[in-house]
Length: 192
Ligand SMILES: [Ca+2]
Ligand SMILES: [Ca+2]
Ligand SMILES: [Ca+2]
Ligand SMILES: [Ca+2]
Image (cartoon, rainbow, N blue to C red; front, side):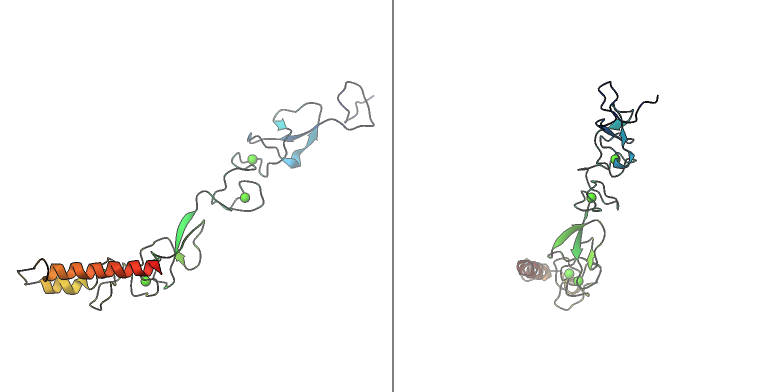
């Protein structure tokens, strides 16, 4: 006479009840079992546990409440991929498309590069593609290269051959004045 597959584990055969507990494999040993591998037994087989909430029993870093990271996998078993990842990058708007992000604009975190955003925040005028740190300064009353100085190349030209750069009215003083003007302009833009 064969032993019934299911019994209540009280030592006597009882084919009317199925009270033996369920067990689930935990092959990656993360403390969470694979719901697809259920067995019923009076005691846990080797590498089987009572939990059944592991969504990937081949990865010990995947289980409910695990840290989500940017790897296109669902680490925390909530059905969403890379949400609230712990290793996101910071991105900056690049409205003028010059490859330099707005130093004064919003910054946001994401795993991959969003459309219209870049990793750098070096553009002092994100509405002017001709203004960014890769541009050469020209004498146009604008801080083209975002170094905080306006038309500094012009000022350098004036300084050539000038032996007496006065502390107030000389080229150095003029450059300092224009530099301060540039900084004030940038602060005004940031406060808008
Ligand atoms: Ca796992
Ligand atoms: Ca997830
Ligand atoms: Ca720009
Ligand atoms: Ca400049």
